[in-house]
Length: 151
Image (cartoon, rainbow, N blue to C red):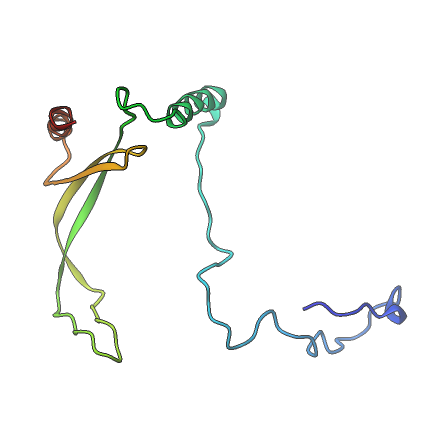
């Protein structure tokens, strides 16, 4: 915490261990709740060092597309795909009670993988997500084919 500066000690040579701030208040109350913010959280951002200018120019082109006003004749569609791991419980979860939330054991059994394909049109609020057993070129082409048929 902050405390007033003692003018009498300014310029004086240090001496001994002293009380080393034992009488100063802590950073926060001992009963304070954690808010999820820690100093260890890091945001990673990678821009290829060999192509900084080229990368930034391409990114600005993409951002320009996203800033266009809504036009139903020229929709702005976004696509993403996410591979996921399928998990199976190894122990029966304990049901929730009025005193405890549902409790699930941290151990699991891997039950394969899948992929989720998502298309969205942010300015109209439309989105479509489709799970698939795998993520191949053919799966992607079929998703795009379906998108063209329905949109």
